[in-house]
Every structure is written in structure tokens, then in C-alpha cells.
Amino acid sequence: MLPQTTPEQREVALEKARAARRHRAEIKELLSTGSLTLGEVIDRAEGDPVLAGTKVTPLLVALPGMGKVKAKRLMEEIGIHETRTLRGLGSRQRQALLDHFG
View 1 (cartoon, rainbow, N blue to C red):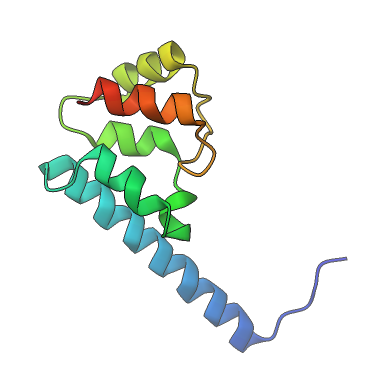
View 2: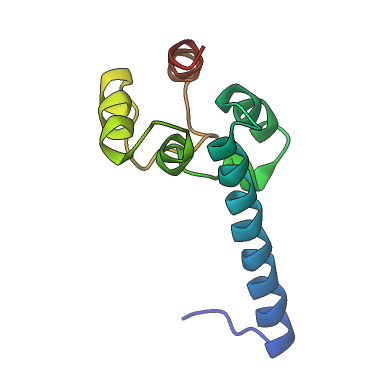
């Protein structure tokens, strides 16, 4: 049985989810404009639980010149599953991404 939540608890949870989506969208926008590098995003994820829970694929797709197909190929080449989050990256996977993007 699902836990019962009050309307106030539900509203708090919904606002928290909206804030997380806004934060992820801002990061992707900064990546797409080149204002932020993938290395900087990976570093920030260590202290940011919302960013740490972000999937790698949408972040790669947000990078200039990197579409869905290139991102998928790169992730296969490095050995990163398509559902992997920044938090879930191994040290070798993280280093391979950083090496690829200089």
C-alpha cells in the first residue's frame, strides 16, 4: 500500500521536483553555450545531489556538436550504460569522458 500524503506534503514534493528540473535545465543550457565544461559539471556533481542524480546522456547531448547518436556511440565506446547517472560513474568512466572532452 502506498503511503498517504497530505496535500501540503504533495505540494512540497512537487515544488522540489520542479526545482530539480529547472536546475538540470540550467546546467544543460550552460553546457550548450560553452559557459560550463563537462569537467566542471562532474566536479559540481560531487556536492550537488540533484546534479549527481542527472543522467549522463542528456548532459552529453547538450554539449555543442554532440547529438544523440554521437553521445550513444561515445558511451558505448567508454562502456557507460545509457541509464547511468553522474553519481554512478566509475573513476575510469569519468576519466575517459574528461579525456575525450579535453
